Image (cartoon, rainbow, N blue to C red; front, side, top):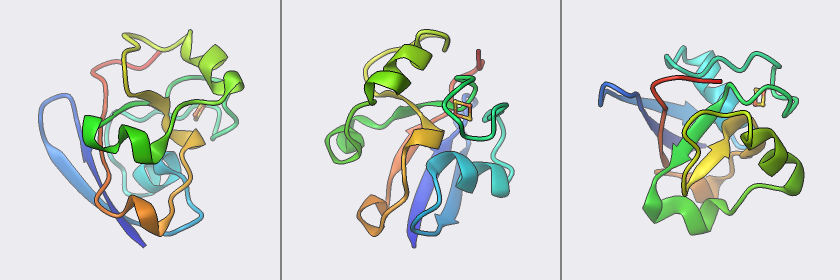
Length: 106
Ligand code: FES
C-alpha cells in the first residue's frame, strides 16, 4: 500500500490509499479524485490523466517512456514533472507520493 496525495487545482489535498500494482490513475479514479478524466481507461492513448509529480518525487517516479512522451504532446501545459498517471505503477516505494492535478485535461 502507498498513500498518495493528489492536490487538485484549487489546492485541495485528496489522500488515497493505493494498492501496489494499481496505477496512480486507477487509484485516483476509484477514489473519485476530481480532475483525472482517464478517457482511454489507462491505455496511454488520451492524455486526460495528466498530473504533475511533486519535485521531491520526480527522481523516484522517473520519467515518461517514449510512448508516453509522445502522448504528453496532447496534454495541456506540460512542464517538468508532467506524467500520465496511468503510466505510473504504484509500489510501496511510492508511499507518500504527491502529485498535482492540472486545472484542465486535454
Ligand atoms: Fe488515457 Fe492515461 S488514461 S492516457
